[in-house]
Every structure is written in C-alpha cells, then in structure tokens.
Amino acid sequence: MSAVVTPTRRLVVVQLIPALHTGGAERSTLEVGRALVEAGHRSIVISSGGRLVAQLEAEGSEHITLDIGSKSPRTLFRLGALRRRLRELRPDIVHARSRLPGWLGWWALRGMNPRPHFVTTVHGLNSPGRYSSILLRGERVIAVSQTMRDYALSHYPWLDPARVKVIPRGIDPDAFPYGHRPDDAWQKAFFAEYPQLAGAPLLTLPGRGTRLKGHHEAIELVAELKRRGIEARLLLLGVIEPGREAYVEELRQLIRERGMDGQVVLTPPRADVRDIYAVSALILQLSTKPESFGRTVVEALSLCRPVLGYAHGGVGELLAELYPAGRVPLGDRQKLVERAAELLRVAPPIPMLQSYRLSDMQQAVLALYGEVAG
Image (cartoon, helix red, strand yellow):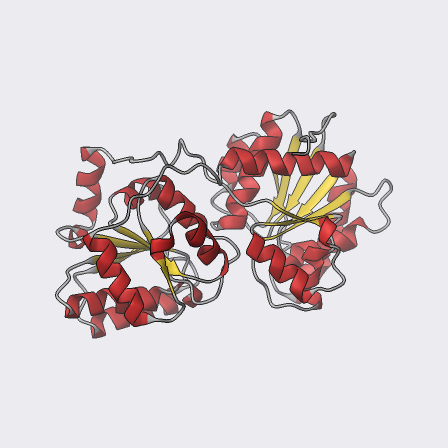
C-alpha cells in the first residue's frame, strides 16, 4: 500500500462548478471544501450561487458568485472576470468539476505566472468529444468510479491512464447509521404532510426532475404492482425543481392516467432524506442512462434499506458489489416488477457497510492535491 501524501503547507484551492443547488457534484464540492478547511487550507468555490452556498460558507469555505456555467455565448465574456479573480487569489490548485467552467478555467490560467495546477473530476458519463475532453486535461483526473475511468479511457485513447485516479464518492456512516429509524414525532409529521403515502410499503425514487432518472419507470412499476394485487406507495423525491414544471405536469398526467392519484407523491428536494429512506420499504435507482456512480445506493444500504436498480453504469457496479439481489437488467420491466415483489416480500439481509465512506474520499482528494502541489 502506498503512503498517503498530504499537503505539507497551506494550500489555496479553488473549485469551479456551475451552481450550488443540488446534485452529486455539488455535494462533493462542499465535502472537499469542508475537508480543506478542517486541514487548515483555504477553500474557495466559484459558481453562480444556489441554496447550498449558506452551508458552504458556514463550513468555512469562501464563495465567489460568477456565472461560469450557463450555456450561453454571454458566459464567454466572463472569462476576463474569472482570470482577474484567479490572479487575485493566486491559488495553488484550480479544480474544475464541470465542462464549461473547466474550459473557462483552462483559458483563464493561460499566461498566469506562476500557473496554478489544474485538476479535474469527471462526475458524469458525458458524450465523448472535444467539449467533454476538457475534464480529461487535468494534471490529475479524478474518476468517481471504475465505470467512469473505463469510459474515459475507452473514448479518449490519448489519455494517459497514470493521470486518472478512481476516488469514489463516499457517505458519512454517522449521517446514515445502520438500522436507523426516525422518531415518532418525525413519522407523525411526515405522514400528516403526505397522508396518501401511509398504509402500504413505500417505494422512494430520489432524483432531480429529469427524464433520465426513471420517474416514468417507477410510476409504471407501482401501477403494475397494483394490477397484481400488491399495494404500494411511491415517493418521487426531489423531482419538483424550478424550470421543470412541464416535466412535472407530464408525470402528473401519467399518474392520473394510471389511476394512482392517491398513491404517488412528488416533492422538491428535502433535507430529511435519511429519515425518508429509513421508512421506505425499497429505494429505487431506475436511471435509463448509465450513471457514473450512484450515491443513493450507498446511502440506502448504509441505513440497511434494500435497493432495486438497473444493472448498468455506476449503479450496477455498486449493486454487484454491495447488493446483488437488487440488480435488474436495463429496461426489463417484467423482471423489475417481479424483483420488486420479491424484495417487498422478503429482502435479503444487508451487511453493515465497510466501504465508500466520506472520510476516505476526502482523504484521497487531499492526498492527490498534495501530490500535485508537491
């Protein structure tokens, strides 16, 4: 086992990301920022802002509001502002977590002396091509799963495998404790807010309001279970977001067509996901497009809650390792219904999670920073 390399001096690290609303990349940004601060370094995030900024700053990081992620020609005019900010900050490392901020950061670093080190993370299985290639141009490239690393190396033959390091995202076992059950007051308040979710096993699909997350698949699953005489309830957690109104209405229309108004609830993102998972009989991961990781799989299994998901991408990778009983071939709706019925009847035991811990991810990223900064 190689020795862990940690920074031996105070570093200034700037992370670039489009916004701080919700999502895996955004949460990882906060988690790395927190680790930097706790280790005595200076952590700065540049984004257009969002609901997570307050938490970021409360945990000791700094935030600079600059829209470097909007897919508009106007965003290119912010290159000068970004370059000025970086020259003022004189960071040791600039860490890009998204493509457009990555390109702006790459261009902004040109001509800087000394030039900060450029690190990237590939969070998603983006369409291969020149635009996406910026996230493979870091001095070190972090892949959030083996699936992600394999994908990058297969589509970019010029990429040196030695520059790509797998650092899986992790969860805090204390935040998702094994066997956790929410207290009676929380349960009473939750089911008072959503009375239609009471009285039958709850299936929860967490995911933002995008078609790729498999919301339609989840609705059809519960409808088919009902046709087979198996009562269940469905929570589409986090689907209601600004700008997704048309998609949400499409889902509501499907729910009405299937006669399930009293069985399905749609919500915005919530802070009590741990308690929601804990009262769920089954957590669903039905993305129709392969994902690079699958954080909710790890969160749910850490709580000792069964997960049912399509066996592809990072979700399939995690299920194969941690909970094979929850894997279903992509798009096989019959198998999906059958497996859901089996897990609702008798779910195989779930051992206590021994991997994918948040502290492991944080330590590995800081060690990488130390290697890069020297």
